[in-house]
Image (tube, rainbow, N blue to C red; front, side, top):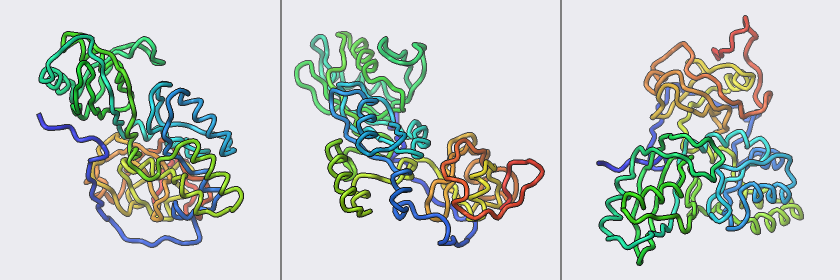
Amino acid sequence: MPRTVPPWETKREVHVKNEDHTDPKYGHKPLERPWEQYIRYGLINLDKPAGPTSHEVAAWAKRILKVNAIGHGGTLDPKVTGVLPITLEDATKVVQALLYSGKEYICVMKLHGNAEESRVRQVLKEFEDEIYQRPPLRSSVKRQIRTRRIYYNEFLEMSGRNVLFRVACEAGTYIRKLCYDVGEIVGVGAHMQELRRTRSGPFSEQSPSLVTLHDVAYQFGEWESKKDPAILRKFILPMESALELIPKIVVRDSAVDAVCHGANLTAPGVLSVESGIVKNSLVVISSLKGEAVALAKADMGTIEIFNSNHGTVATLERVLMERGTYAKTWKTGSGKKNVQA
């Protein structure tokens, strides 16, 4: 069976439908936002330490950065370390996008008895693609059977009863339960000994943007004393970086404010569309400057959007940009929330 491709390995093409220009008087490229907006629409690729909960880590970051709201992209158990995206202020609206972007972990699984390496390798492969899971007793969700996709289980090494492997999976997959199930099929039982998240969607532990809480405290103190925007960019990323793996529809400047007011996107407003969009999938509506305007549900696939000259192509799910960021060029109609810009 061919290896299931995780979201971060998916290649997308851009299909340009129309050409247009963007007015520099409105909006900003994500990396060029004024510092107030940069923090407000920013996030941190944080390396969570062992010990505190994800909520405690987020609360400490909130206190350090003196912000009013904060969120995080996927709970990690107290003993688990690794990549924990922290969203600031209005960037908390993009957290849901990380649910569609996949996770990767390095796990040490402890077998309860002796087993052949070849048998362990075989069983790990059997748990690739779609699997059934019932959340463990210590979970915070309803304990009912559900499906999750395992993109790959990569055996790394085995020493005695300790098995080191890399797993990439959909958000909401319980690695503790995966270890238990693998142990049952191997026939000796097993439990999760140690776990580190190495990727959350587009954020990786290999990225130069990965920082610790100590880094955040030091860099923010430096920024407060010098007010140099370059310091902020050392540890804060634009919220658009969380949306890198979600397919995008780029719209005209004239369509942006209408979308910000809740209008669904229609074909005339579209300038380009990325491949991989299917009906009812999550898409990002983006400006020509690369700003995330809104999250939406696609009403058509990529090719249909590209070929359409009229009709709704995406229904709004969550507006990300503040109203008035771009000029209002649309007229109030008969109550229909569609933009024909």
